[in-house]
Image (tube, rainbow, N blue to C red; front, side, top):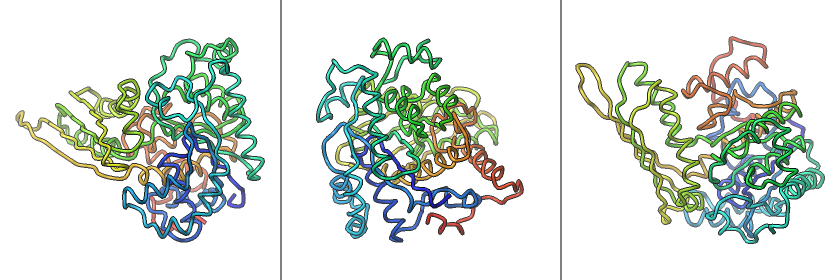
Length: 416
């Protein structure tokens, strides 16, 4: 219901995406911007009685010292992508969020992330003690803001992949490894997710970090009645891939190779310069094609850091395919955008859908949110239109009207 106050706890709260989520929600609340880029304002989703954007309160944690307000202003000044008059009018909201930002953890995040941290966890602190500390932050945030529920969203930098073994398959096994302080069995993302699920907070992993939701934590969420979903928000190149690749299937054209070249700035780009962290990102970006096409063409995704781009990212994709009588042809596209401004409206969507799922007694994975992720957990469907139909079907089922039409922009006022 729209009157419920929903706490939103952002991991990586001082990052560019978080700053645009908070500033964007405040701008919507004050009528300073339209909800362009948000799916949850379209019909039939407006009939779900999703939490109003004006009912969201923000906080979170970060490994760096600083200010969300300063990050938002730095974003606007460096990129020129945001009207600074909006920031002037939402400054109070940014400062209020700053009051609810605590210290995160860098456990097993890799050197690229550890170097950014203002302080490093003591090696004497156990995994369980870190979980307890994060859980207390969540309880404190909920208590101070008077939130009815807290939704946790992981927007932190990409971690190196976690090697999944038998400790990550069942809740009991993971709990035993934590009790024994087997630090190598977790990443920071595991700690955040464990704490969130333990506190009954719906959890969304918008990052490629696979340590966030191993099978054991998904099963724990199911058992505790907590909705969870991930991995890796789909905002740019992979979004286009998931829409374009079905074209070749529908026309029986053979994709010979699909090469992607990505350049980006900002802190995420800097972290992805490290090969260990980049491996996680490439895995989620490169897995879409074979799942849609049914075979594996030659495909390579390259990601390079270009500091001068700041928050901009550019992807150039070259598709080489074979048609009738063996003729070879090509498709090329360029995707350019501001990473944080593409992601922010999706994060607000996911918070609204996750809160709705919790309010309606759902638990475990939320497969209807597949269209938001590069590697949606528990979902075999990777075609964008079919993924979106899953979300439409979900809304239709709750509305009790199976014959609802597709989305309409007429519901844009539904964010209030």
